Amino acid sequence: MKRLAIAVLCFITASIVTAQVTVPNTFTPGTSISASAMNANFTALLSAINSMQTTIATQAAQIAALQSTSNLDSSLASPNGYLNLHGGLALQWGTASASSAGHGTLTTITFPTGFANAVVYANATPNFNVTTQSIWYLISTTKTTATFQRSNNNNYDTGTTFKWLAVGY
Image (tube, rainbow, N blue to C red; front, side, top):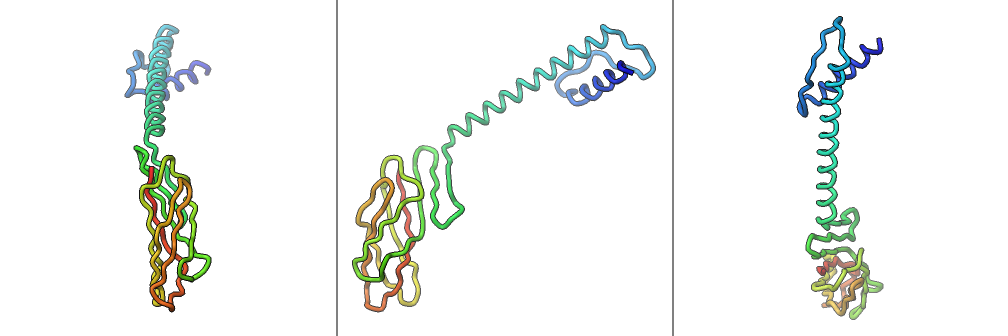
């Protein structure tokens, strides 16, 4: 019974690794199996398993290398998000609200994640509606913030929200 279980295990394993290696001995049910034939099959199967382990380890190393060098990092799940691209370029965006609707209002936004070196571009656009005619000017930036100033074109402007975009590295 023990030999039958070993033979079945060898058959199943041999079927799985057929693409990797050819087993030297096949067995016919009801016939006697010699120890040398069984050992030859175990040796061949062990070689196939070792080969598969080497292949898996190589592929895992290649995946790890790709993951460590891609530098593609992002947060896209909310209105304020960012995308860091390979090579260091980073895009960040969001929506902000001013504390008041008055002319000259300053609003500082905090980026979802800080830029590593500097901001090279930042802009704001009002959320337009019937009464919104504001223009937002960039006043200053740091690696973690941008400050915009509001300028109203008329006295009927009640919009206080705007969308912003920043690019840096």
